[in-house]
Image (cartoon, rainbow, N blue to C red):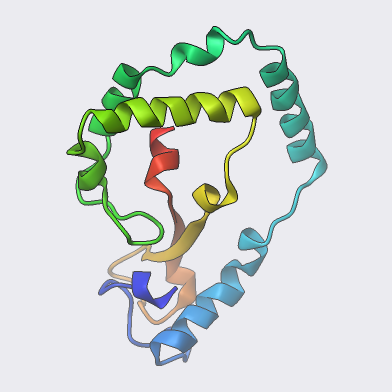
Length: 155
């Protein structure tokens, strides 16, 4: 996503010179990581988690309290963007106390039902320069970080 490229990226990367071409260059590099499907290890982990969730007592699922959510909200770093750039972490940190109550209900529902909506699992891979003294025009001098949903970070 070109909007995340920011000022830390060179205006030329691997011969690509415009934002779209540079974004497409990184997209082709990170395609395998981004499109990674389930493998046998992930399937085993998923089934193990599903078994553990289904055996939980409903009183255990009420452990995500508004106080715990407030604590997690306060630990968010300031001015961090959400994947969709609609709001930043300061909005969550400075929200009315009712937000923590609603989020605790939401998070408990995630645990009870073993389901998190796909839109909350969205992320954007953003290239970050590895070595500021190295070549900024070479894609091998970049690493990817994932910008994800702030709500999921709190969860």
